Length: 520
Image (cartoon, rainbow, N blue to C red; front, top):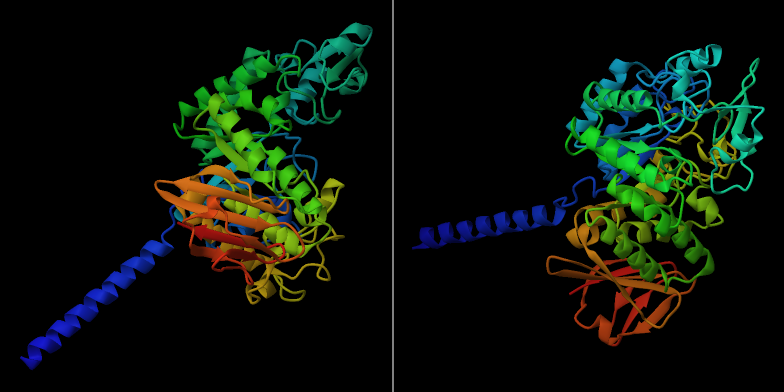
């Protein structure tokens, strides 16, 4: 009998251990699936240098894939990597190549293979609004009016001022002559919306469109990428031809889907929601610049009451255009002042910005270095400074192509140091990313704004498949105690909280620039 009870006790204990193990596994299971997961934007030249030449490269990036996996990233977006005469490489001279500073085609193919082994998708910048003025197409078109590449670009004769002023209007300018550039040794001008070194491609040309499809197919098949970030998506055609812009992206998407049915396309359309929305049929993912500006503005003003209301308005509007749209949310990117600088170097506000980004709906994008609190203000080189991996003398991967002005060793603790500090910006991001990745309501849930009669608070409910989370952020610099309201009924379990937050019998306490998440 004694042996029987002993055996039974062991069996019960074993079952208990197994059940606890299964529970822990369920709690730690990642439920987010890209493209609904977190994407990490990389400026390759500043990210990780593998060979000591001072410039980040593809092999350096490959060596850091485990870091990105550990951070919780499910995809990377790479700024342009093709040959180009500029440091930023948004003026391409060869759409089928890799810039030699970054490596080789083989290096990139190895990168995509290694990324995919870690379930990290790869998105590359596709810059097709314009080429470089040093691209062989443009050089030949400029030399020879009868060149087949002449129709790849937009031209006018300099004796025709009416054409210069109205032939390709931008909509934003009453006089767009600044977009026309003289062709040396010629009576012709060419159109370049951004500047003379970036002549616009002519999408009225069937030959040019076929060339663009060929480029897209090459990167999807030969290079193994999962999709594209489409630069200057609003400017393929002039602003007076928005419907042509919308149709072009539908056409492009359908051609790319012939090669890869689940191809991912995310577009850059700098505009309010009503201008952005029509692009959603061709570009199912679009950057939500408006919400990024809203979050930063709210934090600087100390008012959070309208954040969720505005987000709900935008996403409800978008869902009417494309119910399957992907809201690519951001705090900053390579064209904007870094979020910490926008918030006047207030680390507490920057941590809360991350909490807002990762608890609101959307598929968040992080700009490299955001997770370690890098700073930077324009000009552009200063918002693209090198990532700090380790302390000086120990950092074998830090790029040195530019001497940093903002993100220096005096202003930013390197990643290695932040990994050891549980209160660091890095651990703040990693915790929040993990929280989001492991919760379906935070990843996929709908958004219901909640009014708590306190303008400093941003409160909303995320709902998915029967799970409801009440998220409350305090955008003020003082701790806040709020009485429990009817909207808070049933939310009694603390799912996540910052230090100092708590639920009491009649009130909820939230620290300055803090967050609490309650579960029904």
